[in-house]
Length: 383
Image (cartoon, rainbow, N blue to C red; front, side, top):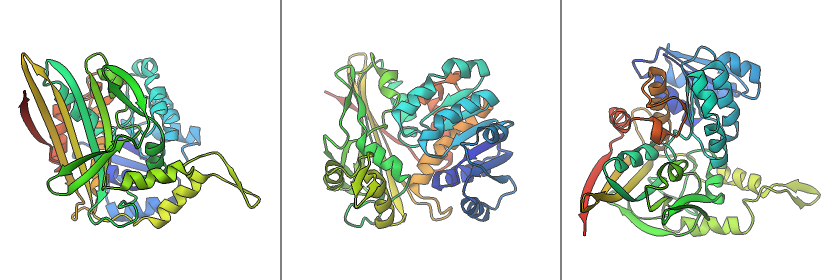
């Protein structure tokens, strides 16, 4: 099979790494508008399967030309391009998935369902970590119950050695990070889909190997899950895990207006506070170092008269052998797995579809384990 990866950043690098190490993949094309990124990727991966192409995805004709002939395409670029990429995939009849990051863009992609079905392809947005892998894990947990009560998803990417002031390091797009913190979060509360403010309802939690942490609402993590499970579930939410105190510190920046996109006049110049904040975060926060990715998905419900709870946990770490961060592994590997499943025709249905409906959970989890992303499951009976 032939797979196209758009973007040669951290996540594009991770996807290409996984693809060239997959036996079924014959060739991998990675496209980016920055030649330096492509050269770095070529030198590090050093594979005969790999081809790199300089491309600006806003050049629609060149995009169509490149996408044609590939079995699947993975978008590892900024979410604002994903809708036009999905439309291009329909034209070229190429299966398409992306890393998501914005609820409105995902909704627009899913509205292409009829066209995608007619083209005989899959369009599956939000195929990274969260949303992404955790959506499939949640669906797997839900399948174990006759009647559902709740799904609570907690996910975080953290430095193994945190440094002040935010105890955080940049492990993916700064634009995506700010977006998660400022846009509203979709939840199901008492059976009704609603939106809540991000960076609210802070709770304490603990992982045995890491210690005490905090979690709070952020945007995008539930993605399509509320709609997929509405009518079957009472409560569903997603919260981001950080070291204690992070939420209070970052929320102060937001409350002061530093995440606003509207221009502010300053000394005769117009400046967007959000652009400045993003630049400063990239410059001032520690560069990527060894990290953890922590995942906890708790599903409660009933089988017969028994109230039960199933909990799934993953603690993934920076991989010294490959040089891939935990965030790269847990974000790009799921997208690579789904791209390959689409190319093999292993999805449950065609069209523009949420992954929790299109991807077979057990098959997906088996692929994670082959990549040493180990899911630990526990079950308890509730009174």
